[in-house]
Image (cartoon, rainbow, N blue to C red):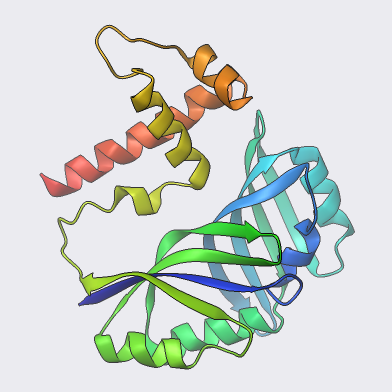
Length: 221
């Protein structure tokens, strides 16, 4: 079985409907996409990891004509949004490609935002032929950049692919600053000050990272 880790990018406004909802927002952003699934013809649901002002996120989703139903949970600037909306353009195309070529995604997909484009970093699994054909079927306007390609090994340590950008940033800082040394050389509050976050947010992020470390260890033992 083969796997490929790729980035898919597209011009602002040409992506899935929720792109337009959060485009240009400084108060809140999509950090990762935990799951996407069609629920009926013309509609799909997704789970989004959000960072920032969750009340602002609720307001944006409430005002978006593309959104049929939503709910936002979380605190301290970190949350998860359940969103049901109409499929359109790129979403239809990508979901159709997955079904057609029987490609499996690894969740979550890390969200990418650049000055002129948006996108995701994602790992996919399948046969070599299926992955190649899926890449060839990508719609015009979607750019694919290959990061890694190889044979999937069940004990392969791919923890970093499951972390969000913020979790990875915080974990690397915690290691560099000696948070995991004995005795500890820094605290939640000091890490929070370095990143401009609340100490509770730092604690929650590190707990999630540590839980994933435990899961990875358990799966490999």
